[in-house]
Length: 150
Image 1 (cartoon, one colour):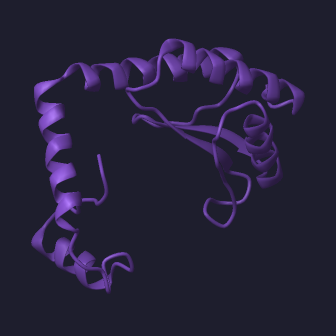
Image 2 (cartoon, rainbow, N blue to C red; image 1 turned 60 degrees about the vertical axis):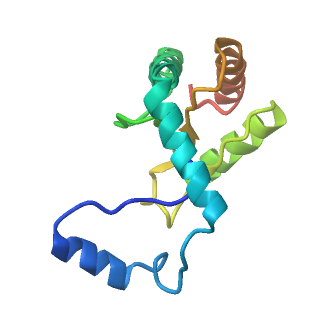
């Protein structure tokens, strides 16, 4: 992917989104270079399906390993894997500890989520190796234990 998004739905839904969405209002078209990069990304996905397979292999592995450590990974069925923390302070502390251990993962806290539902938001990609994932998992385990999350 490059930049942008898609609204799919009925004509009424799309028209509503186009007229009410803050991110759409006052926006302009993408520069030609961005459009070319988006097209190239679609062509790679079409001609090299191994990237899509590796994304899902990485996602399944990462979620399974986090769960086996005792982390609550919520109900996501996408490459976005939440690590549920409960309180906002806990999520912020986990994020900081992960950063200090070489992992950049941002906390999602109140008011972005309901009180008591703070989390770390991770998103997988196909470019990560098993060694990369294992290094991140070791950091999650170290910091998660130090904060008594697991």
